[in-house]
Image (cartoon, rainbow, N blue to C red; front, side, top):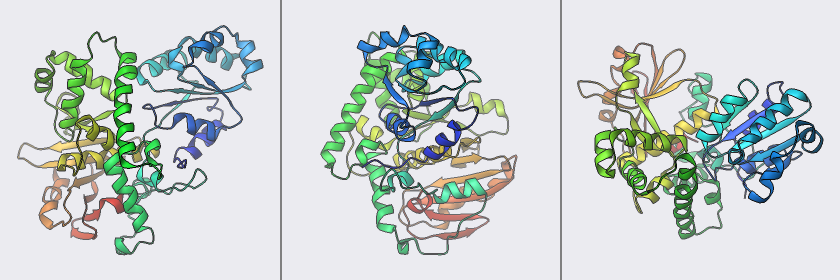
Length: 416
């Protein structure tokens, strides 16, 4: 069963505009880029650049031949043959009735070439694993409904929280999608309801091996993968924590500079996000240590070979990763931070909007109390813009108002 994607309408709308003749879809392997492109643009010819037999043939085509044979085409794994990006640029410049969708799983190789050759000619969209609202869709035709969080961020208006969450007509489906996400993550292949859990676990193990053998070797010519594998495992263990680059370097037996470079590879390949610290001084946001969060809990748990329950830090990372993905579907232009003050106050997530901030504290508990909101109290005093709203997100199924614009909500309700 193919799940619907929130990006579909944005892609179709962009393709109909004067700036949508070249659309680039980038993201981790197996996030559904090919399915998304082929479903949205069924009239486009699909060309697999990953096939070494036919790859060279495409490079021999002139702009005129591209226009004649493939005026509308999807080029999959186009970073495998970067010269084709120059070909597409030439066709674009010479023939106004052509349109192309370029797909690639290597952000570094693909986007570097695109910035060099297609600047001002293309629109770039990132495709992430399924969000919880997408997991809730029943088929491709189902329109993905925005989550509570997306509605609030998109409109600035707090949706109704007066109804008991457990009485929501789709409560069982929401909890099933939420629990699936926490255990196996959001990769589309794993959402098939006919799969057994051991099949999902096998898929995740194979995915990680493929990532190491293909994506990492695309990013860098490693003679020995072992130091990178050690960094990958250490960061997966540290998800939800402030990064200590010296510790990472010692664990992997590499220099601090190499540890920084490996972390950059994890970001570029859409495996992890680094959440910058918030300071009034903007330069400090760039120089102080970030928090690391794996973008998919299924991947993170598989790397460390973990089964069973989550730790608090793993839960925090899973929620922040989901929020991150949902902001990207909004074509969100703000910034996400973590906050730690000298007096010990910590904030899991601070979302900067144009007119102010939204603060989020994440707790794995099933019973939230006022003490869980203590770091949110008085937070507005240290910020440089208004604090619009604060949330405590947890596994408590009740909505609670703690005053001072602080609301405690079930994570499943907030994200669905």
